[in-house]
Structures are given as structure tokens and as C-alpha cells.
Length: 260
Image 1 (tube, rainbow, N blue to C red):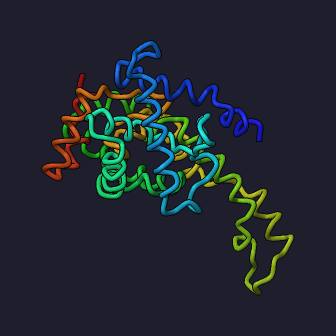
Image 2: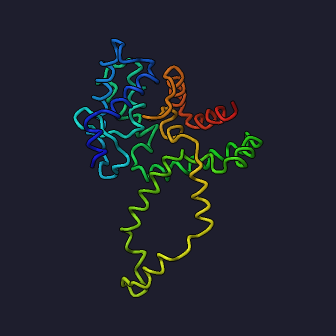
Image 3: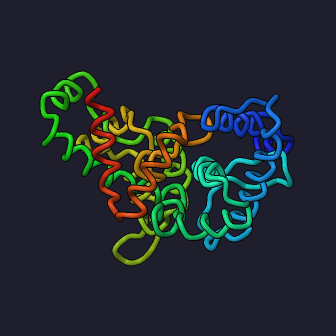
């Protein structure tokens, strides 16, 4: 796989980690603390990968590679680990925090990409209803000019569609007839059958999604290659959610972003 080999060599993915440190920590490669922080981050990511309890649930599209020992990384994980390290706790203690904070506060990170996206869609649908209640005029405006805006951002939908196309070829039970036998007539009929207009329209709307997946999956931590919230704003939000158990506050923060 050419893409995987490219990531194993470092390059683009090392640049992505560097960009994360620059944006979220306000560090550049010339700072004295840059390389130590990067080393600690990669070490914790390696620890997280080695302790992943469900490696069989991962797909190639979930992961990318760093130039350090071929570590497999979910693109939503580094901002979370980096935020924990930014508190100043030692890497050994940070590894314990990562092991506990993900299952309790960010459970969707433990799912495969496709499972995570399906679960996230239900959160985005609920967020839409909340926006309809609190910001009805804004929602009407967005629905008119960009229907489906509340779904996860476009590139995530594209990945899901690619996975579904791959999985459709292996879904043999769909082609089994009433006698329990595979038949060419059924298979041919399935291929030429017109798609359900309502379902097709729904999927088209999902392609207009503009809300980052990280808003509700990692509580605004951001993602590699995307926007990341500065830690001086992120950590107080996490403090509020973790100490009070108020995980609904992320939806109201999202409303405040829309209202700006």
C-alpha cells in the first residue's frame, strides 16, 4: 500500500503532529520544549495503540501512521492525548488518565470508524433539534441555503460511503432467495433496481455536513489535519464536564458558536 508506506516513512504525518503542537500549544519546531513534547506525545500514542482493547474493530481508514515505529493512530486521538499532556502531568500519569478518560468521557473513540460515525449521526440529529428550539431563525436560514449542515463534516461521510461500497460486495445474504439459494435473477434484479428516492435524498443531504466530528466525539479537542481548540479554552471546558458530569454543555457551546 503506497499511502501506508508513505506514512511509515514519516513525512505528511509528522507534519500533521507538528501542526497539532503548533496550533494547540503555540509551539514551533524552534522551541526548546517542542521535541520533548513531541516525543512524549508519540510515546503515549504508542501506549494507547498497544493497549487498544478492540484492534479487530479498526479499519485502515481509521488509522494513519507516524514515522516512529509504525505507530497506528486514530486522527482524533492525538489532540486528546496532547491536551492531557499540556496540563503538565508526567507521561506515566498521563497514560493512566488517557486509559480512563476515553471510555468514560469519549466512549465513541473506542468504536470502529463506521460504528462511530453511525453513533455520531444520532448526536448530530439531536443537536439539530436543540438548535431548532433555541435558534429557529438561524436554523431556517441554514436549512434553506445549506440543507443537511448539521451532519458530520463532508470528508467523514465520503469515507463512510467508500467503506459501504466495499462491504456491499461481501453482503451475500441479501441475494439469497426464498429457497435459501443464490440466484442470478435476484442478483441481476438487485443491480438494476432504482434506488429509493427518499434514502438517496437523505444521503445527499448528509454530504452537506459542516459540523466537525470532534465537537461531540472528543468534546471539542479537534483532530489532526483540522481545527484544534487552544488548550486555554479547551481545558476549562473539560474541567466543567468532568467534575460536574455535565456532558450536555458541549451542545450548548456548539449553539454559541453557531450564534456568533
